[in-house]
Length: 494
Image (cartoon, rainbow, N blue to C red; front, side):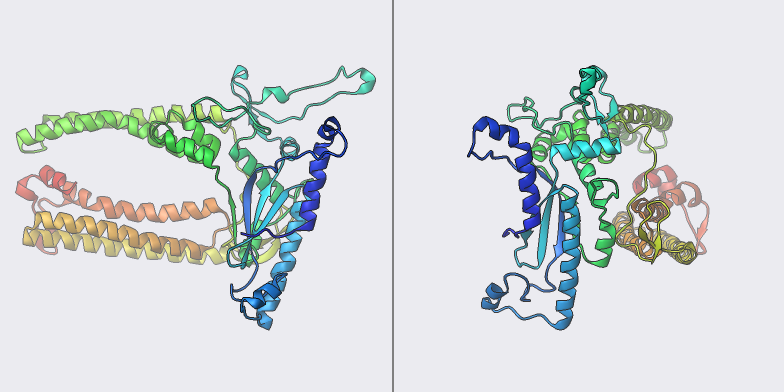
């Protein structure tokens, strides 16, 4: 991807480089430039540049004319000029906030990729302004404390009031190839997630030394195509090498947390806790399965012991998971976190209004309009569940009439998967129509729809066999369990 020349961004970076390298330049002597590596890029913004790849536009029009590209129409020219003016305003705001920008064309020159970076001094300044919590060293119990800059003190007091706290914060390093920790680089007190959160705050916040760019509004209007963080291949390779300890056993769950954040780490922590606790029930289940083969029925003494044991297992599993989740939340500094204002989803639509919390123009969608679509969603779910119950009972009737037990099990398994896939798409469409503002609201409503439907789809047949099948009629046809044993029928269904 060719580099896009951006004079103001280059000048800002050059001034910052000379300012920080002034002391080293004096040591090197006059006439010698001090090279300094650019800061690491953590976030990427993708702006639209041309409406089509075959349109001739921009500074390289002569080159594109030689390539046989078409001149834009009046509508396309107006659209690209609008994109250019908004893109320039955003880039100026990002550059004025102290961020370092690297601009590249896409392969077809129809998009512009902007890599956003911030040096350590800027990150420290924003962290101190936001009172961002960082992890302390192990000798300070690895607690979390708000970041504070060092205070050099006052000269008139002979610097007796100096306060140096930078040595308290833990330095995060990437393991080297030999398994040892690498030497900590500049800015090592910030993890990958810390850098991304701070840069995201610089881009979207209205505080001092911040750009105040409304990314959600830009994406909603089509002036910004994508906004995402960059991966670090070194840390990914390290986690991929130790994937079992990171994602299965949870022994190195801190590596997942330092890279992906606490939310993703808690998910894999729960999965590792579940995997460990399922070892004993799986072994006992295999033993009881062999006992069932001997007795030729699951209705035996071993089944009673298994039911009692699984009841106690579920109680202790939940209890010890709460303890583990609380201990890791305390360790990671998230136990006392309060709810924060979420960013507006780019897909959220509505009229313009002043947000009383942020004080900026935001989209507003009245609840009176959303309640109509929520009522429609509830109605669709109710009708879908009624139709689903009718189809499941019809399958049971066909199984009873034809006596095709194995064929029914295969058809029922395929039916469950197809219905789950189909209703997932329906639930997503219904949730999109409800037009929720925040991601958490959208995910909660989408999850509620899918859980209700999938619970009925997956477990209704089991409840029917266990409590309603034997001795009852289905569509005026008397029903009975397989071989007169409902437990055997239930085990076959499972």
